[in-house]
Length: 115
Image (cartoon, rainbow, N blue to C red; front, top):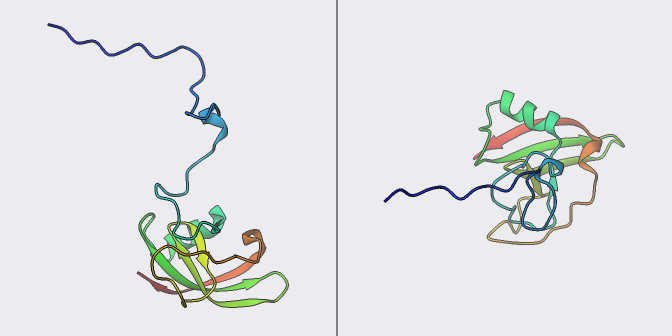
C-alpha cells in the first residue's frame, strides 16, 4: 500500500482567517505575550539586545529606556521581543498593563538584567 501526500492547492497561501501569509510579516515570538496589551519592540532595539548578549528567543530583559521627549523608564520589561511592563510590580502570571508610549520613540536603551 502506498500513501500519498494530499495535493496542495495552487496559488498564494492563506492563513485560516483568509489573510495571505505574505502580508503578515515576520513573527516576533511563537507564544503570545503574557500582557495582552503588550507592544512590539522595534527590530533595531531587538538587534541591539542580541548584540548585548540576550538570546534571540525565550528571554526576559530589564532595561532602562530614554524616550525622545526626555522621559526615562527605569524598569522596562521586555519579553521575547515584546514590551510587557513598565515596572517590576505585578508580573506574576497573565496580567494587563497599558504601555503608554510608542516604542518607536525610544531614544536610548540600557540593558540592566537578562533572565
